[in-house]
Image (cartoon, rainbow, N blue to C red; front, top):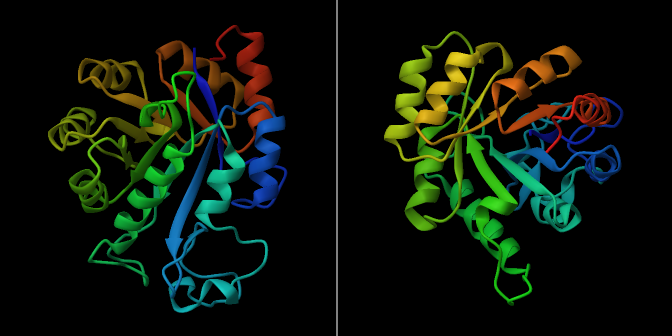
Length: 244
């Protein structure tokens, strides 16, 4: 069984990384959301993929009040997500103009998602486990390591892409003590999945919009498929008896 995760929301039909796209993802059958996080000049965590807005302005040089109305904060999306699982991707790479070497963004994410989790209660009045609610991911090992140093309970996933050796990739994730590997679709075959499973890692694949590939990945045993079209994925996997 595999979980459908809406990549930047239901982005095939709505503007990506907006409350509208995230809200639509639920009605389109997604069980989880994937989103990108950056930091404004006044240290507000906002949801946007690129470092710059479409008009060329750098998000890290703008106060949250100067950002477009459609651009949500991470807090707003988490509140809207409710009981949906959320993959929070920290965008913080050394070659980007808003790179934060001190990993302030990671500390802020750790604090916010911890506060978010405490807002949930079970029948026993206990907060659910982090693993049931979210994953924090990044291409930057340092960003994830910083989070682990301040909040060991937050599940972490390393994003990987391109032509990389599966054995060394899995070994790297395992060596850092992360909980998941989030590979680009073209990297994944049965051997990759088997290696990750032997290492005890969850496998969250991005970005998959081909129905035949969705079924193939589900049959390999991946945990979740990130897709721009959660409606298509939900129907495809549901009809195949593979929807978790």
